[in-house]
Image (cartoon, rainbow, N blue to C red; front, side):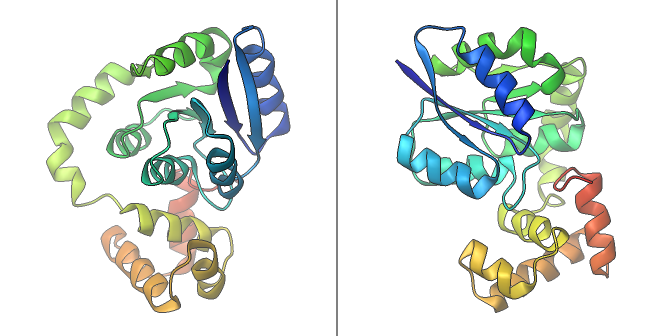
Length: 211
């Protein structure tokens, strides 16, 4: 029996994904999470074969969940779900080593195929712009690597944009307050911004947080 983990902060989305997954007699939903931190805890406990993870989630986004799954050496392949198709998001997904990427609008018709591919450790990507974005990513990878935020910087930016103080960010990420401030300053320098308000706008624009 193949174990599937679902992580999305909208219950109706989780229910819809579960209904599709449960059409397969040899698959079972082993757990559901509504934020990134719970998703990691469930992945460590349940050790699923595939984790279906929303890109935009509270506390820790889908990419941070993916990185931590890899960090802990779990076997789970990750399928990132997103409502938004953009070069920026796709680039981040590829740099994080994620092998599955699916638009939520395609889930009804492509979810089964995507999970089947990941269970066989094959990549699965869909989307009208994917081929174009992939070409652009491969041609610009070196230039973009200096501009993109590191995983830690991205996590700090998300939590700050969600209203966390440096102290609470340090508690969530298990970092010192000084390290959090260093990551925050580095992110702002890379992005060329100088205020928390601009940081929040960046996080909203890149879908790190929802409106």
